[in-house]
Amino acid sequence: MNSSGAASRLWDRVFERVRRELGDAPGCHDFAHTLRVLKNAERIAAEEPGCDPDAVRFGALLHDVARPEELASGGKLCHAELGAEKSRRILEEEGCENAAFVRHVSEIVRMHRYRGNRKPATLEARIVYDADKLDSLGAFGVARAFHFAGRIGACLHNTEEEALASESYSSQDSAYREYLVKLRGLPDHLLTDSARRFAADRAAFMKAFFERLNEEQEGRR
Image (cartoon, rainbow, N blue to C red; front, side, top):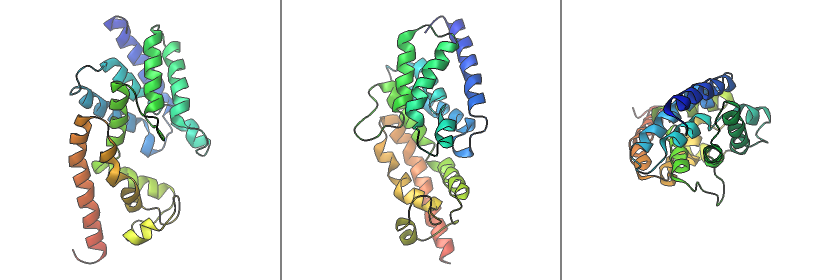
């Protein structure tokens, strides 16, 4: 990065660009989500010696910058791939002259949603990946799961059998299905020791929440 003053001015300009880009994004991936991911990333980075905190912060800030394009395409575009190029363009347009730093941040954005055998290669990319996944756990993880189910018109709750037998985006694609299919196994896929520690408490909260929901639905509480 450049001098501290130049870095601060760059941060302010990029922050405002991202805030505008995500202004109309749905609640699961709005600017508030980006700010939570940023806080998660800073918390993880503080416990991961040797990381570049500037790259972590800019990567977290820019990680979902192409979500609006992915949503507009109906999922045909990958927001991580598109976001990598968009991040590069934003950083350059806002005055970042450090080409290596721009490439690094762009790759962090590209790899925060890895698929198949592609995995984040740098510590900074692993931190941002984990920071994003942490926001899918805990109280906000529950809230986001119900928000998404409501957006697609899914039922409020169902049984484990109904949830696991259903398809994505169906009337049975409930918040509970999201937990069973994806979220309960998410802590096992985190890439840093600190994130796994933070995830344990959040995962326990989610497990207890859905257990209580089942008890109330079945009349046991």
